[in-house]
Image (tube, rainbow, N blue to C red; front, side):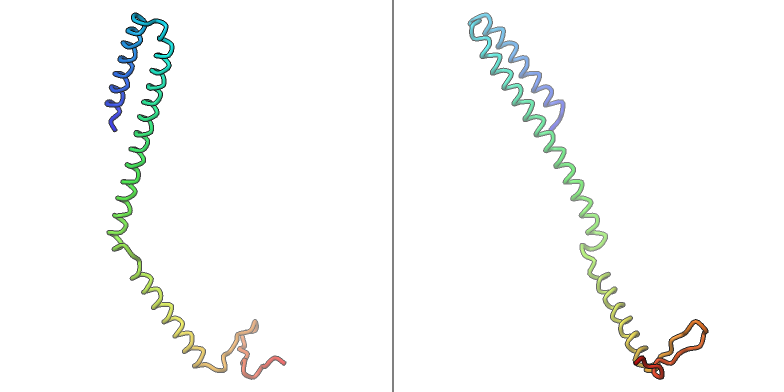
Length: 127
């Protein structure tokens, strides 16, 4: 909603209220207080409505901007990351396979010690 339109509409309401107040003052002065109460209520409702609709419009603009960002991300990643996930899974499977081959190829693995001499784990069994 345009701010200028809201301002002009509010100004028109105030002018109508002023003309109405003068008319009521001339014709029926005893009814001026209830009329002013009604005018203040109507102006308050109009202000509340204008502020609410303006806030909703701004929120809609923000949601539209966020939607554009999401669409850009989806275009850049084709909407998913499954290719990357599949590649990571394949690499993890390859690493697991290599580790199992290495463990199977050396049944008597050597463990280095602080002195630098390897200790054969097959000959040294803890009791």
